[in-house]
Amino acid sequence: MKKNKLGSWLGVMLLGASLHAGLSLAGEAGAMSKADELKAEPFRDAKMVKALALGDKLDILSKQGGWFKVKVGKATGWVHMLSVRKGDAKKGGSAASGLLALNAGRAGTGKVVATTGVRGLNEEELKAATFNAAEMARADSYVSNKAEAKKFATQGKLVARSFDYLPAAK
Image (cartoon, rainbow, N blue to C red; front, side, top):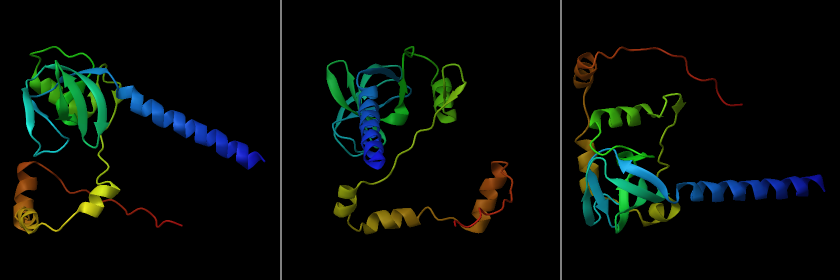
């Protein structure tokens, strides 16, 4: 009997949390942290609805993967989530300060740190996936050899750090 009550309670809590997560974005104010395009769909190659400028105010309606569905004036569409700063932002603010705050995951007082993650492909996208030789060739073009990697690390003043592997899972 206790297991059924616990399971029911846990189910209600999970349902409530998921509903809250979906509703928490609805109507949230934001502004563009950099210029970008408002897209008709949440895809990089989707049709552009309109160009958005740094500081343009918007309302965040929902989130899908790495995209926010937003309303800007009378237009509704999708924009990269990394181009949006939640909350009020001043139009014409410093692009550098907005990007630095975004990249550091810090907002407001600097005492709160948040990260943005994109899960990857959903089941439908995986089922619809097909081999793309051109994209594979493009990915292969990014390969670098050890000498190039070492040169890049030296230019970036990167240093090697050793660390122990995590213990094996039990």
